[in-house]
Length: 223
Image (tube, rainbow, N blue to C red):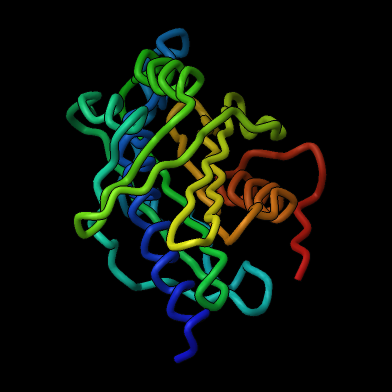
């Protein structure tokens, strides 16, 4: 294995570390706003069936079955840890990779009305400028900011995270979204340097299509 490949593998693990932190924060967000009443019930199996599959992705992508690096987060990400999911909430996820990088993760959640928590997550991340992760005793600092991105579903917010790890820049795009009154989720796309936001937009359209939510334009995936 070449030195570059080793570095990319390390960064891929870091991506999963920060990704799982973001997911942990976001899966508790507002799934069904109070104005629409009680959310319709959905089973975990039904929710899982709505995840993007590798067969829907461009050639070169594969299912990522590797485990997280077990990283811990600081800064703004730490502020979201105390927001707890309520009883009856469910979540499921799928992870994909194209070689070592880029990485793409989709997490879907369903359950009780948690609109207040969605707003809290937005508030935390909107006010967040710096974040950090600690992995195997080494601390890495990063920056975070709001990102221009088309609205996903009925409500969404997008953020861009950048870390400098072992001399290389790792970029992670995070999109929180509410698709229907009972289902929402988060998309994460990580790559060296600047992630391809156009590809992430295509993945977002695909996620909405699988959830039965029409997007403004047909879903097209560039290879």
